[in-house]
Structures are given as C-alpha cells and as structure tokens.
Image: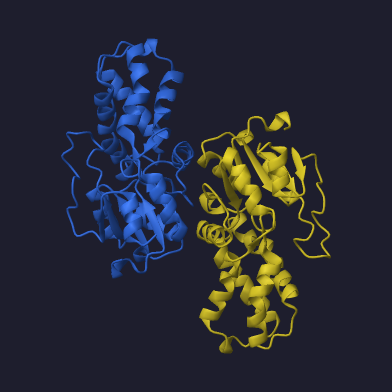
Length: 241
Length: 241
C-alpha cells in the first residue's frame, strides 16, 4: 500500500457509475414505459439522454440560485424534460407512472465486482457513499443491490452537490476525521480532482463501459491518483483487504 | 405482528441504553483514569454521575440558547464538570487523557441480544440509529460492537436533540418515508412518547439494568406502545424476522 494512504480511516465512494451500472439498469426500467407510450427511442439512448441532464440539473443548487433539493426531484424534472423532447403526451401519462419510472434510480445493478469488493474493504475500513444521491436514494440502492455501507454521507449531509468543496468537507467532518484520513473512490477524474483539492486521498476505479461502448471520457486516470485500479476488488487487493 | 406495524418500512433505534450498555462500559474505561489520578469514587458511580449530566447538557441546544454542537462536545464538558466536583487537579490531567476518556462513549458493549437481534431484523427492514449521538460517534460504536446499521440518522441530521420533534421528523424525511412507516425502538418511555407524538410507531425494549440494579425509571412500558418486549431478539421474533 502506498504510504500516502497509511493514514486513511474511511473510504468514501462515488456511487452512480463507480459502484452501480446506471445505464443498463435505467434502460431496463424505461423499456416497458417507452413501449407502452409509443416513444420510439432505444432505451439505452433514453438512459443516456436522461443522464445527460444530471450535471446541469445540479448547477442551480451549486451556485445557490436554487435552494437545496434532493436528487430525486432533479431526476424527476430531467425525466419530464427528456420526455417532452420526445413529444410525449403528458395527458396520457399518470403521475404514478412518472414516479415509478423515477424510482428506477433506486434499482441500479452493482457492477459485478462491487458487492464482493465492498464487503472485503468493509472488514477493515468503515465505508459509505459520498454521492450526489439522497440518503433515502442511497439507502434504497443499498437494499436493492446488497451494498454493505456503514453510513451514508454526501450531498444531503452538506445540502450541496459535488464537486462543491463543502460536500466533501462536511462528509469528512461528519465521520470525525481529517480530509487526509478519507479516501474518495470514484470512476470520474473530476470528482477526484475536487476531492484532492480539499485534501482527501484519491482512488480511481476505471469504468470504461459506464456510458456504453462509445464512452470517451474517464477511460483512464488523468492525474497521479493515489491508487489507480480497474475494479473495487482491485482496490481491496491493493489495500491488503 | 400487530396491524398497526404493517406499514413499517424502517426501524429507528435509540442506542445508549437500548442497544448498548453504557454504564458498565464507561465504568471499565474510567477505572484506570480514576485510579491513576487518585480519584476515590466507584467507577460505576462515576459513570452514573457522568451520565446524569446527559439530559441537562442538551437542554441549551434544544431551546436554541446554544447553537448545535455534537454530543462529543457536551460529553466532554460534562466530564470536566464531574471531575471538578471530585476536586481533580486539572493541571495534572492532560487534554489527551480527557479526550481518550471521552472516547469511551465510542466503545460501549452491545447488550448480549443486540447484534443477533439487529442482524435478524436487518434482513427484512433497513435499520439505523435515531440517537442523540453524532454520526462519527455512532459509526465508531457500530465498528466497535459490530452493529449492522444501514444508515445513521438522528440528532446530527436534524441539528437538534431528542425529544425535539424535528429530530424524529427530519430523520423520517431523510429515509423518504412517512412517520407511520417508521418504528422507533427504545428503552425509554419519554423517547417513545415523543416519537408517537409526531406519528412514528413505537417499540419498547425493557432494559431494567441500564442504570444498574437500583434502577427506578423505565422498568416497564408506561403506555400502550405498539410492541412491548424485553430484548431486540424478541422484537425480531414478534416482527417475524
């Protein structure tokens, strides 16, 4: 293990993309809805369209233009935006149907290495999400996929979204540690850059299929992260768990 | 299972006294300190004295006279108050010693039925502390005792202490449920009264030795709580887990 990680006492995880495969899971959940309403779009493309609203939807909260709202609310607004672009007749769609489709974000399959890797890591380190997802969303996702979190940190604790510094710092403070005692584990270079900027340690997990076979971003580590891996089990290997 | 509990989707636990035996654990941790500094008091009496400052120490935060501070801070102040009453020479005690003794609150033994009971309950319900302890304190306690929480709720989520209504309501909101979908599990009638007042379901666990053999309060259920039990394993029995 690299000496820079010797002081680490908590592992904080990005979740969407790093721990769970949102793309195929959202496509699976959307398929019957799209078919049922005659919306002619590949469910995987629909998942990409919905997800493409993810970062922009948080921006008004990050900048303080909009007060804190949890991610479910932003996801629901993004869903309606995307459906509107496909010319959906909202008179023919019930609120319950939209709420149910939005709950797809609580039923995302873990990547094949996630549960075994987290279970190994958790024997030695307390672990928790440091995600933009809400506490309720992270809890539901953990129950769905069997993710053995010890605590749920992240955006709802800080009432702001990553990559704002306070999202990391408030999470670190909540577990009673210094930033250099917490390692951020993520598949996204921007997340690690923001975490490092406020003093956290950094672990990269490559997820080259998160955005499908045509993925162009985050294929490799873009900086000298403290650990660079290809799976959560490899993180466990390298940390001696 | 009683019909009133049919809608329950989350079990929220009081921790100090309900899940862990603070009295004997604090006495064990305090004994070498007391001996080392020549403080002539039974360690169990010392534990009771320290604990007797618990409820009053939170009052200024509850009433808004004092801004939110986590329980560690209040415990530390209470420790110094109690030591001062015993005429301790603070010049002979280091800050590190006091900090270490204060950390005894993160090393409290679970009652014998707690881990097995929680583990059984957790297969069917998500579970978490709804305690006045901090997130860091609850996490440390879980790691120490092997408590299989899925999430940590309570005072730090709400920035106020039980029995203030918002401590329960903000915790319920954080897991995305209605109050009647959450059961509060506690050994203290006052905790259950406050939880019921804002709509939560109520499960009493008798802990007649929490305050030692001379305990006079909370020996029995003082109201018609939704479940009345003598252990967390009995809660699991009655909920069919």
